Image (cartoon, rainbow, N blue to C red; front, top):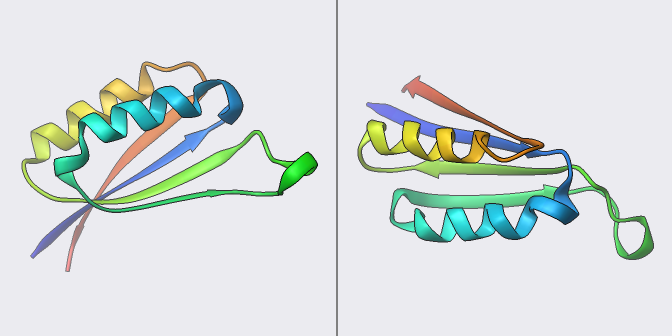
Length: 84
């Protein structure tokens, strides 16, 4: 069985988070699980955010999602394919 995951790091979270969320919403049918993390709270909110996703469906769509996210300044997406 193959499992596809994607790890996304957002370097300038306050600037790009809304655009990333919009893209992930558009591609929501391919995302089984999505977990977003960032350090700090309130006044100490971090500029760096991480999103971990478990993907389903066609691997070509996963690659396209990674490509779209990587077009954004300060966003780094990596597709991780695993055999389990």
